[in-house]
Length: 107
Image (cartoon, rainbow, N blue to C red):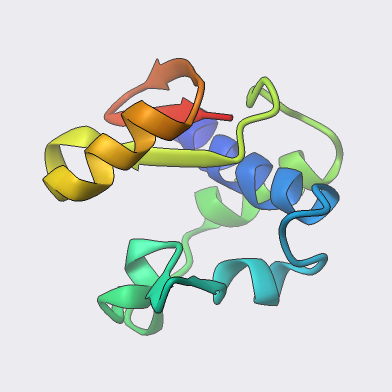
């Protein structure tokens, strides 16, 4: 839904504002840590096949204007789609904030 899309944009913008992450959208999206991309659509190459919808454009515009539901989240995952190793890392290293749809958000 559109709030979920705004949340994803919020996480990217939160990372840009955090000194531990790159300071621009492209570098955040394409960041590798430990040899692995941070976002699965980059890792599995879905990124290059997705058509950007009007709803996605609207979500990004709303996030750019300051609409923020993220509670400062820097990470998110869809537990049912994540690898067990990744789930353990999230659970053991991050602060769980909330769940929206299938995604859980962390700091």
